[in-house]
Amino acid sequence: MADFLADTQVEPEPDRPGRFRAALSPEWAVWGPNGGYLAAIALRAGMAASRLSRPASFHCHFLASGAFAPVEVQVASLGGGKRAESLRIDVVQGDRMLLAATLWMVGDDLRGFEHDFGRRPDVPAPAALRSYRDLVGDEYAEWYPIWRSMDGRPVRFREPPGEPRCHTWLRFTDTPVADRAADALRQLFWLDFPGWNATIAAHPWPFRFIAPNLDLTAHFHAFAPDADWTLTEGHVPLARDGLVSCVSRCWTEDGRLLATGTTKHLCRPNPNYAADVERARAMGMVVDEE
Amino acid sequence: MADFLADTQVEPEPDRPGRFRAALSPEWAVWGPNGGYLAAIALRAGMAASRLSRPASFHCHFLASGAFAPVEVQVASLGGGKRAESLRIDVVQGDRMLLAATLWMVGDDLRGFEHDFGRRPDVPAPAALRSYRDLVGDEYAEWYPIWRSMDGRPVRFREPPGEPRCHTWLRFTDTPVADRAADALRQLFWLDFPGWNATIAAHPWPFRFIAPNLDLTAHFHAFAPDADWTLTEGHVPLARDGLVSCVSRCWTEDGRLLATGTTKHLCRPNPNYAADVERARAMGMVVDEE
Image (cartoon, rainbow over the protein chains, first blue to last red):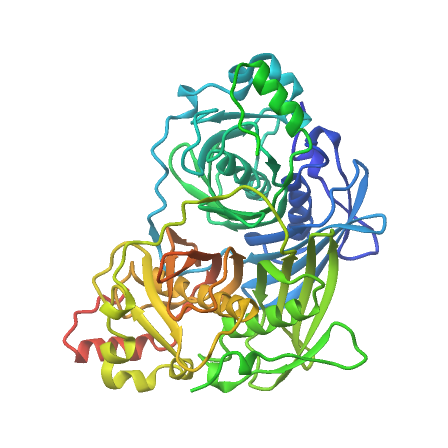
């Protein structure tokens, strides 16, 4: 049970402007360090290095998964204007680049068009839903380590294949979120999740493929550090030719649209497919192998 | 009347791997070189430099608008794997960086999840709609130069403020599109447009703000070089605190979802607002100045 903010800390290196040190914690493991977790470390260094205080948008490529070990974060300002700053952020481990990111930071005193059509989808509140932990029982202990420090309540769970869309409430179990910068890290982390769940909503288990994220884009709209649960939505209208593309969004429980993101995924054969098929057959399922 | 592909050509520099020369043409002017046009030059250099042939996703920051003059494009491979390559692309003019981009290229032999829920919105076909040229009459001659080389047919035009969503058919007037790479450049260019039209769909003219693009993300799904018209959709659910965020999509006339994109915009006071108000009043409109 880990604190996401403690585990995404970045330490500026004395006498090396724009350089930060961080360490990848195994508490945020999936098959390796979770991508959204690594992205949050990059965002945190970018926010720390910027002369402006409000994150507007973030984008990154996931280049390599890396080890649970120290990383160096290198931040450079690319320009912009008085009211916006563009930053480039690289996360490096030894001589391997793990992540390449860019970030727009903006000022707090901006005025512009104002409208809000970002209504929250009409789904049950988290209090009316069951957590993954309760839904899957003993199996939960086998889920990736990351699931010890976060909690999820899906609106649909293991239903027959349908539309490639998912809605899941997510929260940290042990991470107090105190301010806007911390909330931005949390939002970025949540935006990285829905791509997989939205994809598999249209396909029967066992899945022939896995679909690791190639990239992650986040547009930050508003901040709600006080909020506990976040509703994440993913929508993957099209999967073809080995690629999957998701648009994801985050809302507060009281209906505020917080962020919009995209993720692009590259499919690979599921290395556990044969074992999954066997397990499914043992459960009495009829599996149509291709 | 210009050819978009002729005007986005990139010339590799002999003996300097990853360096290309291009020139920004005034045929693609808005208040300066159009952002999507500049992005297409970056994408073209990235595709030319990659060891792989299929563009998967592209992202860029618009840093400065630049002059109609030569630019240098610098491409570096950041890594990836056998089936995907990450590239970083900078567009530089003199000592100014105009654009910073990243690109994922992938192989052609990928397999993965297959589904298609990317249905085209049910809007009238281009043949049933009128072009901007016909809708605005003499005023069209005053539109930015870019409108001499492209044609647009909006589904709604200057209607009362409503939902922040737009649908517009777009085509080049003088650009034959022969192959997948050319179509990727066209898709990227179209994805940059809808942010503004979707935003103003929710606001009465005259507009107090302009909203230049800070960034552009594109996910390429499919290619249709043979298609003439492209349906572009923009959706801007939320505008607040000086920022606007759009999700845009492109479809062919026969209903194929081609690409999904996002654009983030920074609002600025409209420098022509006073003149626009005067013009509106001369037309008999009641304008509520703030």
